[in-house]
Each structure stands twice: as structure tokens, then as C-alpha cells.
Length: 337
Image 1 (cartoon, rainbow, N blue to C red):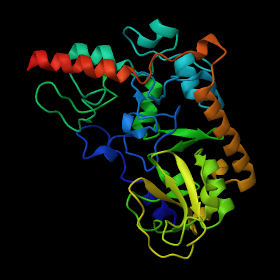
Image 2: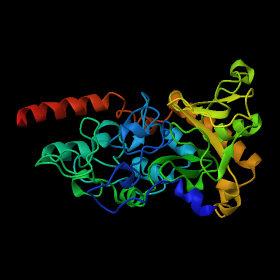
Image 3: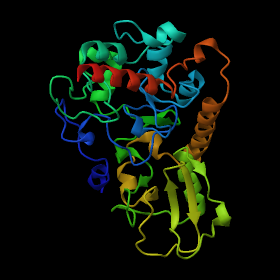
């Protein structure tokens, strides 16, 4: 059963490019659920906000990377690398973009180095395309271990271990590219039922516990949970708006193909006991649910409130940043071709 659960994590990450596919890039998967705002990432399409800051390698919204959010998550590595708390700040070489703006150190300093070297794709996607292999003289395969990307060694270690992309639940890292330690299982896009070794969540309270654990928005009271006998059954995630709904009317329904933006939230079967070695991820539900609720609230507060400390204002890398980079890249490519 444990092996079956581990298989849900996807293929093992390769050591170096060329990459066979996105899942071969360490921490480079397209996750079943988007990483929440403030979580860790490599690419825009991994984030609920649709923007992964290339300097902080974090999913950001218009308020940028919030000190209070990362602190509440318990992400000690980013606290050290970005703000120098609990460890040395990131040392990535070259001119630090964020340090010059607001005193926060870069996790990677890819923009100036890549454009100067004209090795596009190595440290960031080119027009939203991830380069899996070298192409011609200018496009290079994505590889954040390369010196040109100027990434902190601690980040590189987690990247190479397939342990960077994800968020924190109750101070414990939840890997969005490896589902073997998740308390709840998420179905694939287009699935008509839960994966093997798991079952649908058909209890409303358990559905609320699952969405709280995953820090998603509770939409289970929509129409009092009476969505009709022909609607999707049980506990379902809408990845487009990060909500979880529940339908009481057809809990005994067989296979039912969900919409493209929906995923079943499922509970492991016998595999739960097999994963019991992972302490805090499999603690008693009441303890972790309380932690999940607190952390979800903290995350929401961090993404919407005004920070009170000057060092919390690491917010220059916002949704506007990709526009500048893409425009500059387009201009350079026009000159070259």
C-alpha cells in the first residue's frame, strides 16, 4: 500500500538536463493543486497567483513576499536566506536586485546574469516555455544549479532533492511535487474517481478538515450542500478559485468525470497506517486541524494586511515584474534575429 501511495508522487527527478519532461526537473512539476500565495515555486504555472518571483522563487501576489507570512509558515530556510534571521542571508554573487530595492536578499539572481550571457532558458522560462534541452546557440536547458543562475547553495540543495516547491502546514513542509506524505490525496485532472488505494470523502466534517489542512477556501455551504443528483459527488476542489465544495445529494454515485478545473479530494485507505512514520503529517486529526486552521488564517492575513516592520516590505518582486522581463527579452531577441 505504501508503494502504491508513493507512486502517486510521479516520476523521480533526474540529476541534470536534458530533461525528459517537466516532472523530471527537480521541484519542476505541474502540481495537482496550485501552490498557495507565499509558498515556494520554480515556475508561474505552479502558483495560485500565476506568478513565481524569479528572485525569491516564491508564489507572490500584488503585496509581494510578506515577512509575516513566511514567519507564520515556519519556513526557517527562507527566513534565513531572504531576511538573515536564524542563518546567513543568501549569497548569490553579483549585484543583488532585491537588496538594492528593499534590503531583502535574492534566493537566485537570475535576471541580470542570464540576459548578459544570452543563455535564455537556463534560469527562467522563455515566453512561458520551460526549456527541457539546449536549442541552438541561445536557448539552454533549464538548470538552476548552473553558476549563471546565481542561486544560494541552500536553495540548490532543496531544488536538487525535489524538495523546494510547496508550502508549510503547521510548520511542516508539504511537497507539491511529491504526494507520498500528504494526509489527503488529490485526483488527476479529468478523473472520474479517486486514485487507487484511496476513497472519496463523503462526510462533510471530514471534507472541512481536508480543506482546512490544505489551506483552501470553504465553499461547502453553497446551496446548503444540496447541488443535485447530477452534480459532482462528495468533496471536490475547484483549482481555479482554490475553493472546496461538497454535494450531499449523490454520495453513492459511481464514476463521475469532473470538470477540467475540479479534482476529487480523497482519503487514503490502508495506506494511512503505512505513512504513520511521518510524525506530524499523521497526528491526531484534532491537533493538526487546529494547526491547519491557524496557519490558513495566518497565510490569509499575511497576503492581505499591511506589514508593520520595515524588513517585511520585500515587495518589489510583484506581478508587474514578469512584464518587464518579458519585454526586455523580446527586445533582445528582435535585435538578434
